[in-house]
Length: 206
Image 1 (tube, rainbow, N blue to C red):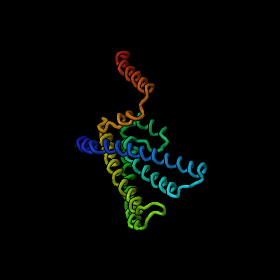
Image 2 (image 1 turned 180 degrees about the horizontal axis):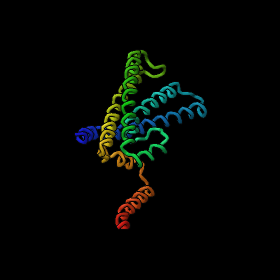
Image 3 (image 1 turned 30 degrees about the horizontal axis):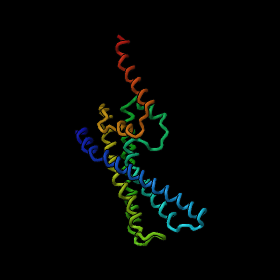
Image 4 (image 1 turned 90 degrees about the vertical axis):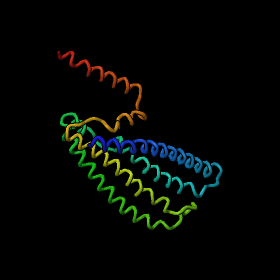
């Protein structure tokens, strides 16, 4: 039952995370071009642009929130992992329990963020200072992406519950998803060597 629910969520969350990640990358490229153009116009042509600073700030906000689902799915949050890695190897069920607590806490934080973010969105009737857009366009992204990321936290929470029950199968294939973007020949070779060593262990023991 839990696997079925997680697989159903994963059919939506993984492709959405990939798309949002690509969109965030495009926004980063656009933001970089605008910042370079601002420097060029200000210090070379001596004709500073009035809109690039605000536009770059808005793009940074969008880029940050669009990356959240992929970061959560791939467990790429900033963290000190030396304790959790040991716990995951030595006592995996206890690690799954603490993971469940973390995901539930994240959902609670996201819910509070959504509430206050929506209240802030309702104040967005004003126009941007240098761009012809309403602040609604900017204020809408935090609560929306928090709602989206809450689905990822729910999926990871289900995975943690399965771990507490002794089912550690990577249904979401999160490691494979991360490997699509971060895999390197050295890492691949190392993983292949480790896998071959694991296969040889029973033979050596016998």
